[in-house]
Length: 166
Image 1 (cartoon, helix red, strand yellow):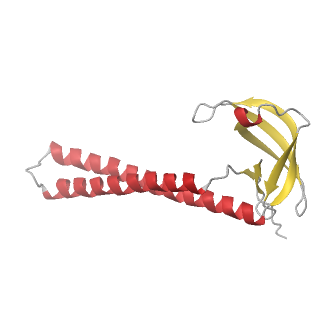
Image 2 (cartoon, one colour; image 1 turned 30 degrees about the vertical axis):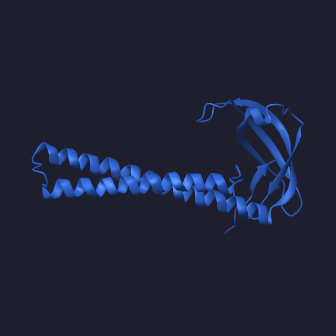
Image 3 (cartoon, helix red, strand yellow; image 1 turned 180 degrees about the vertical axis):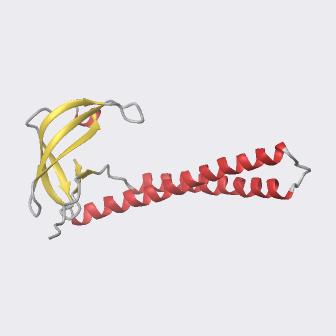
């Protein structure tokens, strides 16, 4: 008999509309700019415009691959910004107010932006869903004062177990 497992709890960093627009704009610039450069390099390499021969053809092909990769990064940036914004809106619409009880606090590696982080093991409970535990790395500047036994306000999507700490 097949059983369904609940979704893994996921800590969501809410994204506002301004951050989403900035991320999408950067992604579009990367995608369109590098996409155009990729097309130019492919045309240059395949047609021999400008008298490119031999090594120049391989150089143009290499540049086309680099440009294609940068365009792909831009496309993924747009998709990621859209998915994060949709998750933020869905959490705001169907999320329920709940509490997160801090069970343990430990140090964690710094984030990509070199912000110190701490690792919190939390028990999250509230109406409309089963209590669950989650371990999340959070910025120390926001939650550095959390100790064992601290109760933090949270918002949880009962269906997906996506939550945010407030």
